[in-house]
Length: 520
Ligand code: ADP
Image (tube, rainbow, N blue to C red; front, side, top):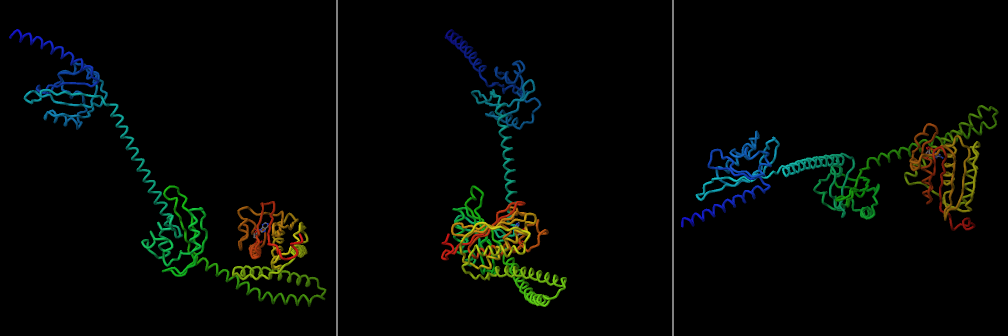
């Protein structure tokens, strides 16, 4: 029994040894550092370490065995995880912590430490196993990730702040402009209005936003023509420009509003919206009206005494016809010339007033267009002998219109051509037929007109800036001409290049029923 026991013991002793060596090899093959501490001995010394632990820490086995593991923290002892480790040892519990450790050469490495107690048959904790993994790289990646996250968050915050500032900036502009602004959805519901709108129409946001545009107030915007234009904005991208609405608005009474509407050009969520800008032009229009009224009254008032003066000058002219005093005769001649000029200017002002009031009187009759032009040119040439005015082309057509007014247009174009060509004394008049229109073009080689001014010169009282001083004028001749031509269903326009000259052309529909046209 004994020998058997011995034999058995011997056998088992050998097996233990073999097993132990195998286990040691296995532990040494591990990439994780492994230590065992003895919990029964004072200060919990390390009684075993594998090869990986030596490699990770840089200490030799002889420098490790018998020491408490705290040497791995060197001077860095204030790590909160250390108290957790102490607790785990006291309670004999498992623990996983990330702890800053230092190699023998002082370099830091992050250690992911797994601590596990080993109990005996009575449940006492005799040993602790510590498994360590160098997670410095992972930690670094985590730290970088965290830093990037912080950076990203900061950037997002900056962007958000920027956006908020931009929004506040935009909204302060929107709230400051002196126009009422309305944003409409695709189905013409009011999404928002600015403060100016609220103040102008004396309404609240609640009774405005969220409502259909046409239901606002007492239906002031419910105008079929406007409706049609607004509904076309999104499909065609055609804006509504300068649409005038005169209406008896609730709270504010009768007003004249000027309305402009555009598709909002921002992409994304805003692209199907319409922005309407509404301007109250009641006062402006009233002032304009007063100016027009003043002009009309003033020119009438001036015309009356002038007609009397004209009459007296004619009488003086007759009375002095037989006088031989040349000085007197020349003085009377000049007086009558200046009276005539004044009479023409006042006549032009009266024309403007009449046009403004929509009271331009036209006595339309068919007349021979070419003959009218020839006579106008001849008549004009009498007073401008230093200029050579040539005519080319012909229309052989009759025009149904007010001959004296059309003559006035031709004369005006000629007189401008002369006035604005101080250095080039040839003017050319060309007659032609274009489709069923007669066309007349007056070409000079004078000062010309800059491109950006070419549209404006047909506005009343507009004169090109830099010629104001050099050439006398009131800036109304072309306005009258354009209105006369427009009232004859034709158009007047200009082509011009500064310092090279200008060509003013107009077309008028031919009078087809008259013989002149068919003779072509
Ligand atoms: P006015 O000649 O009295 O100023 P108009 O209405 O006839 O008024 O002309 C308006 C403006 O157009 C002029 O002030 C001038 O600047 C410009 N203009 C008209 N005709 C010509 C022309 N033939 N050449 C250059 N500029 C011209």
